Amino acid sequence: MIGWLGALCALTLLTALPAQADQMDKRLDDMFARLAATRSPVVAKATENEIWSIWTTHSDERVRRYMSAGIRQLSDGQVSEALITFSRLVELEPKFAEAWNKRATVYYLMHDYDASARDIAETLKLEPRHFGALSGLGLVNIALGRARAAIAAFEMALAHHPNLPGVLENIKNLKESVKGTETPI
Image (cartoon, rainbow, N blue to C red):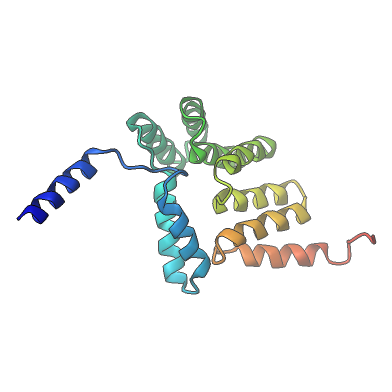
């Protein structure tokens, strides 16, 4: 009976505490290890979804509301509104990597590649394993005509998420496009 009561008290205590989430969540280390080790696309996708869920979550209710609103605006094609929302979120919580990453996405959609690259850099300062930001950096570099930099960014994304969809194909296409353009050392 005491064991059951202790478990109930522990469960009550755990549910009363706000969940640790965002790029500082300790569960991410195990998830990234699983992501690196798996050969199963199903396990990789499920793990990726778990990581995204943590990255987009925050212990502050107001931050969560801004994130949800910005994601909804992006989904509805309200890019200008999403920029305002994610900019407010960055100001409110500048140590929240996903706020920077979402704003980088908005800038990319607006074809403001330099601003997107700056926000990606901020994302990566806070979460160097952010395969979404690294993949985004690859796309920014493609848009700016920097094939070798795009390849490097995509390869870094693969280092953290070896099964990231589309990245191997992007690397292959980019390597083909730069073949024969290398300058001798």
